[in-house]
Structure formats: structure tokens, C-alpha cells
Length: 316
Image (tube, rainbow, N blue to C red; front, side, top):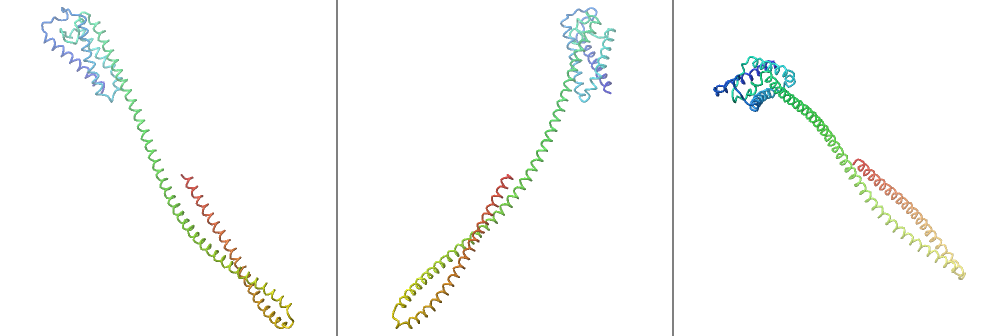
């Protein structure tokens, strides 16, 4: 089908060239024919160049209109041009190709050159046209390769964009996860802070109780010292009474009994005081242990806070 179209368009170009020559001949009827007309070689070259420029432009327009069939055009253009050359040779041999003074189709010098020279000249022009056509086909293929490369780059860019979108989505999910972990860690920190505050309050109350126990112990020690002083005083008085007059022995014995009774009471009080003192010491020991437990709990809480901070730092 493309060969037929090319042949039809080539024949149409030839007919247009013939019609143009006929019109030019009608415009200049006084110009001599090819058998008796002299003309210059330079003007003939210019005219032949114009007609082949005309043919070249027409063929290039045909190539642009059939851009999708460039490969087929390249395969078939030799046949079409060969057929065109054959037709031009036949017309030149038959002598039916008209001439005129300024027709821009066949130069004046062409008739002086003869049919063979004109055919060689036309073949040279056609070879130039073939080179132009080959260059155009090469440029088209080059553009196709560039389009394919651009399509590949566009596809790679789209894939890279999709990959980046997936990476962004993954990072967003990780950010949300880390936010949730941070919120949970903040909640745990608040709970631990509340526990620390409660333990601090309990420690303050224990300190106050310890101070009260220490004050009570001091008062007990003062009373014990006073009792001991009184015991010493009574002992001194007892010794004095032993050395006194025998007449007052009964009284002294009675007094001694009273003193012994009082001493027993004091000893009992002393035992009670000692028992109370031991209880106070046990209480102090218990308070010290509680204090140690509180300090250990506080150190444990501090260690957990450092551990959580280390975890958060490691996550970041």
C-alpha cells in the first residue's frame, strides 16, 4: 500500500512538473525550442537545482506525513526513485519534456548536454535527495532512540518516586510507633514520679518519728541519770547511817528497808527504762532498715529512669 502511495505521489509530482513547464512555455511562446535555442550553463544549473529542490521538498513532505512508516519508507524509496528516474529517461529519450526560458525545471544547458548528460545530472540530484532522505531517516531514528531513553528515564523516575513514597510511608509508621512508645514512657515516668513523691512523703514522716523517738530517748536517759544520782546519794547516806550512832540502828534499818524498797522500785523503773530503751533501739534499727529500703527503692527507681532514658536514646 505504501509503495502504491509513493508511486502515485511521484507521478503526481512529475505531472505537476510537466504542468509547470507547460505553463511557463505558454507564458513565453516566443522562446525557441530545445532544438534551436541556446542557453547558458549557469542558468541551466540554477533551473535544474530549483526543480530538484521542488521534488526534494515534496518527498520530504511525504516523509513527514508518513512518520509512522519510516522503516517501510526507507525500504521502498529506492524503488520509487528508480521508477521515477526510468520515467524521466523515457520522456527525455522521446523528447516530450518541454522547455522554456525561465521554467526552473530543465536548464537551458540541459538540451545542449543531451539526454544522457541530463540523466546523469538528474541521477546526481536524486543521489543528493537520497542522502537527504537517509539523513532525515537517521535523525528520525535518533529521535526515536532519544524518546525511548527518555521513556526509560521517566519509568525509572516513576519507580524511584514509588520507592520513595513507600519509604516515606514506612518512616511515617515508624514515627507514629515511636510517638506511641514515647507517650507510654512519659506515662510510666509520671507514675514513677508519683511513687517517688509518695516515698519522699513517707520518708519525711519516718524522719519525724525518728526525731520524736530520739527526743523520748534523751528524756529517758535524763531520768535514768537522775535516778542513778539519787541511788548514789542514797548509798552515801546509807554509809553515813551505818557509821552513825547505834541508837538509831532500828531507824536506819527501817530506812534501809525503805531505801531497798525504793531501790527495787528504781531498779524496776530502771529495767522498764532499759526495756524501753531496747525497744527504742529496735525501733531505731527498724527505722534504719526502712530508710535503707527507701534509699534502695529510690536508687532502683533512679536506675529504672536511667534505663528508660538509655532505651529512648538508643531508639533515637
